[in-house]
Image 1 (cartoon, helix red, strand yellow):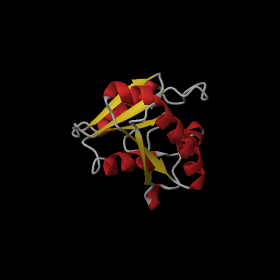
Image 2: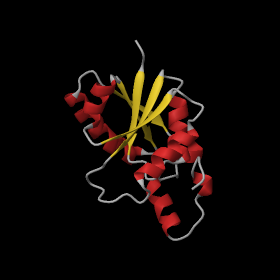
Image 3: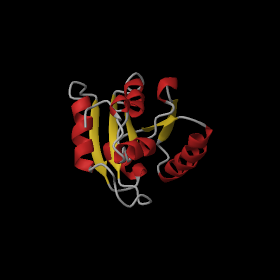
Length: 151
């Protein structure tokens, strides 16, 4: 059976830290689906979702094991629909763990066949956050070194 993992997030924007998690996930899974979800707690995206999809697809153009989907449903429901048995999440620090642990427990409750796999962020990417990158970009700062594609 094919091991399919979903890497869910808003990816606003998709960073080199996210890319690192995807590439490391490919050592564990046959297919990694980058799921760009609509987060009900975030009212508006900074980067257009279609732009993010095209930029992410560009990064993985020659990596057919990586797919990109946009979804507006529970992640556990998406996993059932795609027959994915795993969720991948990157952890930068203990604050991330506390937040992600709660979500993983709920996902497991909603889909008992779904396992969450946590990968510790590589040290060189631990300080990268989409929130900080958005702020730097918003005020004209250079974010090139933090993204795996050109804006």
